[in-house]
Image (cartoon, one colour):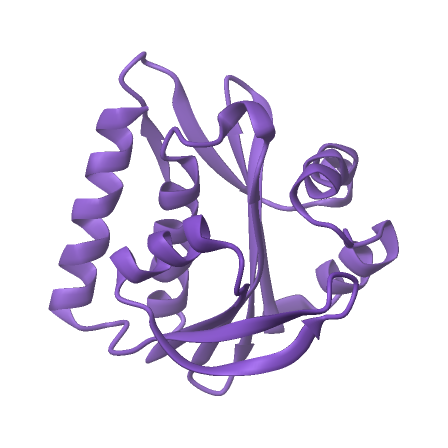
Amino acid sequence: MQAGTDAAGHGVHYEHMRRRHLPAVLRIEHHAHPKPWSLGVFTSELAQGDARYYVVARVKGRVAGYAGLMFVADEAHVTNLAVAPGQRRQGLGTRILAHLARQGAERGCAAMTLEVRVSNTAAQELYRKFGFVVEGTRPNYYPETHEDALVMWLYRLRSPEVRERIDRLEAAAEARS
């Protein structure tokens, strides 16, 4: 799997998410979301085979983040993306999203989509840098907080322009790490 080295010489290594990663993933999940996914949800997602892609990002040998994609026709849907509290604002989320975008493109997807809380402006900013645009809302999508979700799309995923943008964002994130 892809790996990169940060400025301090510490690599970010990606591994397919496995059951053995779930204790670390669940710790991050509980810090990242008001209503975290359960062990059962992650186990079910991992059992979906080629219809899903789940990855963990390791820094200094520890799970520092994770993410997932669901594939439907020629679209990749980001199901989850989270970074450990101690790793936030260091470019790891950007690097993970770049990794997901490449996976989607390699699988032949023409577009990526995701939902994001209307209050999560930091995530929205990241997604906009990648070229995601808001195409709608899902009212009360997050019932635990009574929040709407913005539905965002990144089109032309396999185009040279999008690939170059992803490469630039990833390089800048690596330089910042």
